[in-house]
Amino acid sequence: MSDKRPAIGRKLRRAIAGLALLCAVDAVVEPHLLVVSHHARSAPTKRVRVAHLSDLHTGGFGLRERKLVARVAEERPDLIAITGDTVDEGDLEVARPVLTALAALKPPLGVVAVHGNWEHWRPVRGDARAFYASTGVRFLDNESVKVRDDLWIVGLDDPFAGHADVATAFARVPANVATIALMHAPIGHPAIDGRATIALAGHTHGGQVRVPWFGPLWRPPGSGDYDRGWYEGKTPLHVSSGSGTSVLRVRFACLPEIAILDLGG
Image (tube, rainbow, N blue to C red; front, side, top):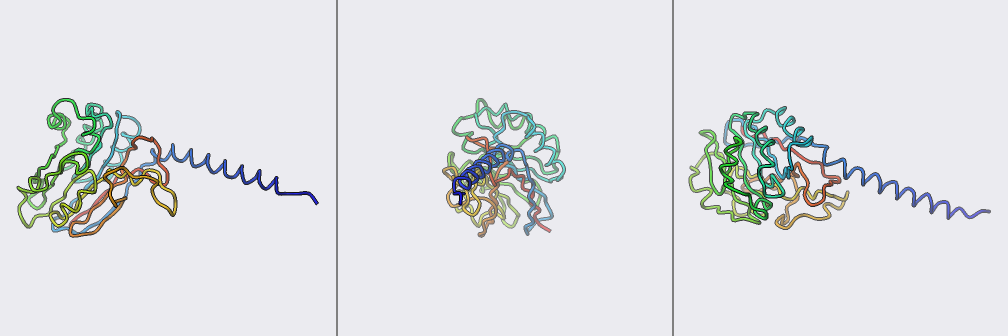
């Protein structure tokens, strides 16, 4: 009787090698498989649709950015909110095409953005506020803006790499209005919990590379205990998986995301 163990061993090695190859291919392809997630939350405001974008990490107006703009346009948001890490290199000029294209969609309540850690680690050249304004985007740095009589947006500097001044950011917001707070790193959530109606953050990339039944292999410093999705509290927080990649240009079991939030009645 022949020993079948060597043949079984070869088959097992081939199966493992084939699975590893499939995972590698998926990791390269997945960053381009942009998904749109939909969320409905109650809020003391008339209905408003918000497109939450985070961690674009754009290097220009390529296929990924074109797809992003097209998918946002299909959703017809009232407001587009960008929660940081728009670029890697700190040179905001490379983001001009995608920011201009998003502003050209003319959402009724505008496009607003805050900075993330990469904008601090590799500071932008020139006047960031003037740059954003030239693209049609409103930059918020520890400040607030009324976008509708019943709705204010509060934009915080990155709580991880920057200086999030909560008191200053909320100083002008009147009582009894709906408020959306924007920040990059979700570790800033406890400091604003109870101050806003809802909060949006990114930074974690959802782990970017996740192992089924285990979770993310790694999350960037500043993520704290936050991963992706919703975190409840007096101020519910949504943490986006982001639409771009950082450091490693791969994703696994963690699709890039545009989050569409329908708030109010």
